[in-house]
Length: 165
Image (cartoon, rainbow, N blue to C red):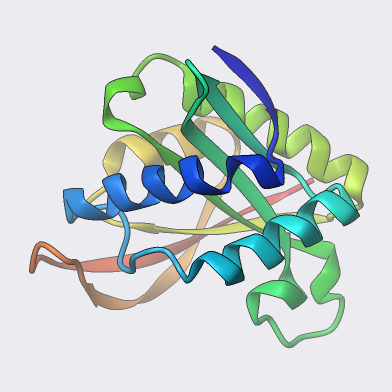
């Protein structure tokens, strides 16, 4: 398995990963956006060398971690570009093998290089494994972001966690 920056050629495999995790019904609230939106975003990521990495096994994206500037993620407050918004997805066959921690460390190190002062993420309260990982890396609970309904019908609380870099 190789971990590297995402590139345009990963688009189809990245979408398949997102679709697969969304189909589980408990980790992602929305299906992937359209192909052209993903293509535009990956182009921006490549152009700006944003902290976005993929784990590739047999030419297939099996995990990804992404950190986007707050302004790209809809944050409208002072210094939004110094806030990184993190997301991570790992195919179920690759979970609990240390891959998430490895991807997170790479993304956090690269976020420092990029100039982010803090990283923020949202996680469902039902995803205790992810919460434990984030806490072990220094993320601190900030607040609940509200109740969400997952594709499987379950209602969960989304919570915000933050790490100062």
